[in-house]
Image (tube, rainbow, N blue to C red; front, side):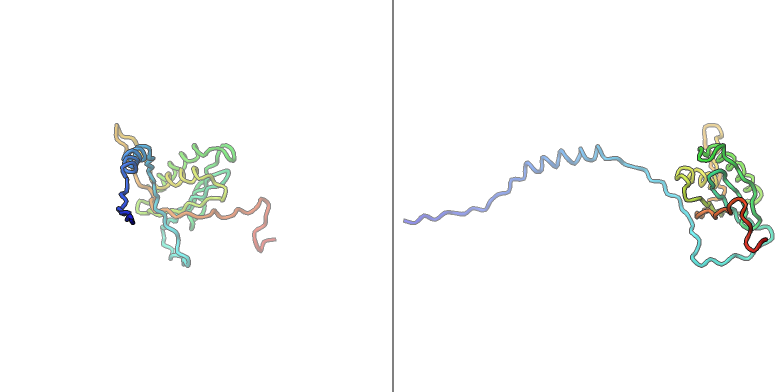
Length: 175
């Protein structure tokens, strides 16, 4: 006598897996860290930028972050003001505050200008670069319980600071 074994289809038991997912998903959602990202729009100069024709009263604002000072100047007219720091490598708090005041004065003279360049030396701390960019982009003034934001030069371009000539160096072609 031969016996035939009946083969029944195996049933998947997924109840334990569903229970695990029901507990795990709320736990992961409750412990997830949601971060807020801040993005600053920057304009990079075109690769083959030709100099723009000069106008009589044109401003091309440049803010150069150096180790010992913050230099504010006009690309056409030269240095406007040099804001020294207390000591090289010291936090730039007072220098940035003086920069805010100077940028507001420049904006009063050129109200239609919105472009500026921030140039930094390679060893400039990131926090300092952001503080200078914020000072150039706009100011925040408290009027009662409200904060009033005033845009100054919101269209920023960033780049590397030009190298300084070493002390005592002669200009090229000079005697």
